[in-house]
Image (cartoon, rainbow, N blue to C red; front, side, top):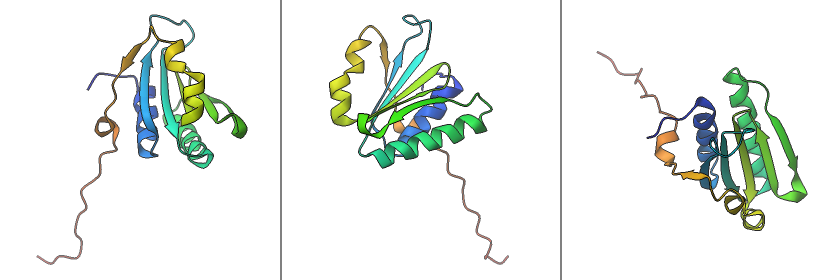
Length: 132
């Protein structure tokens, strides 16, 4: 797995854990002075989108970062979370195809993300009811 800043790791982990589909990372470091990364994912519903945004806010707070800015209006079927060096774009799939963010930033390097690289490590359960 490539080395990523904490913001990318946190964002990807939340998107994968909450079932976002078609998750892509665009590396904008050579193209933009405003943001380094776009993390893009598709959602099946506005409820899923809201759940992801809520969890991303919690994760940013737990990581000690600045509170992220969020732009979301349910009727647009698109949400943006700005956490400084990363912007997370969530779309309903049909809206994602309309906006074509990937085409807008077609010079950006697309970084492949594997779900298993960002899954939370599960702790082994210790059996407490066994007698020695």
